[in-house]
Amino acid sequence: MKPSTELKNVLMTYKFGMDVLKTKINIMVEEARIKGKNNPIEHIKTRLKSVDSIKEKLKRKNLEPTIDNIKEKILDVIGVRVVCAFISDIYEIYQLFLNRSDLKVVEVKDYIKHPKPTGYQSLHLIVKVPVQLANQEIYVPAEIQLRTLAMDFWASLEHKIFYKYNRDIPDYLKHELKQAADTVTLLDEKMKSIRDEVIAIDSVRDSLLLPS
Ligand code: 0O2
Image (cartoon, rainbow, N blue to C red; front, top):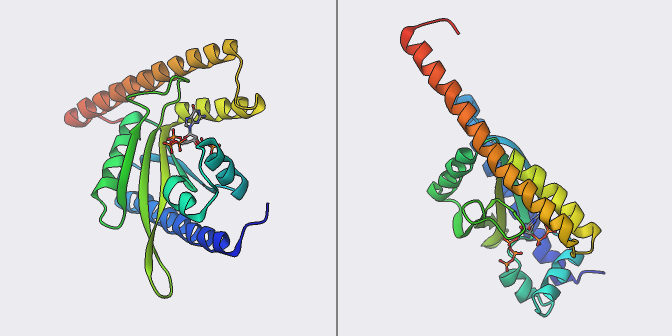
């Protein structure tokens, strides 16, 4: 489907917004690294939603494919996925986003505290990113998905299965995916307790000035 010039211009501003957001997150990571702090981010992925996918989402929401609907109702044209090792890292990064004066967090969906019926877990933030154009500054929306490595593994596979079955996963597979999601929760808890044990051992060792 060929996008109109107006849509092309809107998508251009989203592309700039994605670049701005990527740079801000990279600076966060770099600052932590230079200051010798723990980097809570394992990896970052970004994507711009395709025109077909935007139109398909509007259709799913029973909305006309107008520029206004794209701007106001499709808030994940810019998608940034931040993958962390531990759940505590996710909330730490969330706090960093809340503290920033150069980004506005306008919506939060906590699918970690309240997983979706499918078993999907992630923390979703909708942020408004400033983009400086030649004659004006505009804010474009972006969705930041924060998840652990284990949640990401689950979501990536479930996403592939979802599309393989044309959005209609058979019940037996849904059941197995839900079981796998419960295992993800257990794995995240187990990894956290192992990490806590290591930190506790390290702090005793440090207090006794023992070699590691
Ligand atoms: P795709 O193909 O990933 O782009 P809303 O605007 O709140 O009415 P929306 O935007 O669907 O509805 O919000 P939500 O629930 O926060 O979901 C946004 C995105 O999260 C989805 O984008 C998926 O990327 C991801 N997501 C949500 N639920 C699931 C799930 O059950 N499994 C997996 N694997 N991912 C999920 P899209 O545009 O729906 O899809």
